[in-house]
Image (cartoon, rainbow, N blue to C red; front, side, top):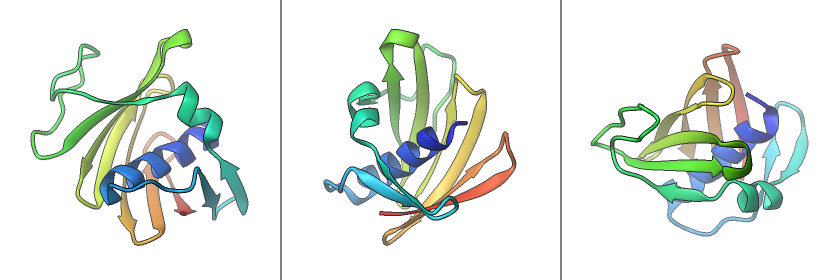
Length: 121
């Protein structure tokens, strides 16, 4: 998964878990760079979805299910939020991810690259 998409997923998961508007940027603690997510928010709107998506992903009934869709390129990312925990799947990179939100810190694990990434809101 690209670093910009991981940062956007962390932002969206935190926004949904906290149920509040957040500044449209995160500090990528691994690369020590502030990532402006304004364009990603416009390009990949977040839509609430049912447990079963037409993409074939079966979602948990325990979580709130969402998709972030980039319609022009038919790319989308499935995201489920369970309180302060989240997980999902990015179809473009064929990558599963999971993570948690702790106050203003978001930790994301990308299974495809087998690595943790940290973001500060």
